[in-house]
Image (cartoon, rainbow, N blue to C red; front, side, top):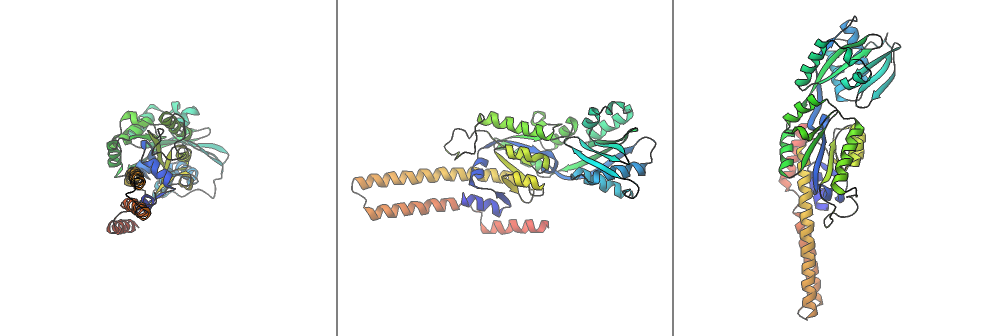
Amino acid sequence: YVAGLAATAQNGVLIKGGMFLEILGHVKKVAMDKTGTLSQGEFVLLHLKTMGNRSREEILGYLALMEERAHHPLAEAIVSGIEKEGVKLPRSHVALTDHMHLPGEGLTGLINGKIVHVGNARLFRRIGMYDRLPDDVKQIAKEWVSEGGTVGFMSIEGEGIVCCYSVADAVRPESAGVIRKLKKLGIEPIMLTGDNKATALAIGRQVCLAEDEIQSELYPEDKLCIVQGLKASASGGDSATSGSLILSKKRHELVLMVGDGVNDAPALAAAHVGVAMGAGAALALETSDVTLLDCNLEKLVYSIEMGRRVNRKIVQNIIVSLGLKVIVLGLTIVGYVGLWEAIAADVGTMIGVTINGMTLLPPKRATINSNRNQNSMW
């Protein structure tokens, strides 16, 4: 375990103990969040259409005021896009109160005493406003979705929906390659996202995921239920973290969850092993068992492969140690080996298995090059 943990740490992966390294070697299903995991989490505001009697500047000011307090990459992109239009936040004459996050839907609050909602189509269907949209606006929203954008709306009490917008998030360049490598390793990847089905499928196609490997329109609790379901079907409801898995029959199809946000924290905690992106939310980092410090998904594949190598080394060392002890014991009983020879054989075996384990450590040159590459990113 020590050599494996040291090797992963040298390559920018922090693992909270040998048990989780061992579990990584037995993972057969990987549930992955989309935003900030398969994608870069760096949204850009692409489109924004206003409606109603209010001026565009006033509507954008309301939208920026609502999104400014939200801690999400999507909100940051909206505020940044509005600022690029030269619109300033109307703090002097507009009062925002009762600002609240609606998990999986959006935001709500009171601006100058009027209820304002900002969020996805699911939110506005729930409050009965989406169906009132003109057909041409619905068609525009569908076109934005087909482009792979995340579409949202804002409404003001007494006025209905006053704007719709589209933001897009670029897929990580390594995501498609990582998905292919996971499948080659015999691991089933599953994408979990709160986006609508059309957007999720558009992103899924870019990262080589089939339609049945994509779960969309999910609330945080839905992600938790899916991970718990995968975990229950994989291990029959038994805990896979109670003791060593090397000789256990409960090691098949263990579930790994990868995420970066507050919404992913429950699912990260529920999985057999949770992996957080290093730039993710503090809660996700705290509840995870593994952290990818430089947010490179290639390190996920590396960690799983290292877990498998560690498990093979453990089996090899156990077989060699027990085999030699049995041989030395037999030779001692028949009188061919004395005390000092037996001690020498035991010490030699210990040194041999230690050296075998140390072969997991990366070459010094590779570590230096890796560190240089990481430093160049900053």
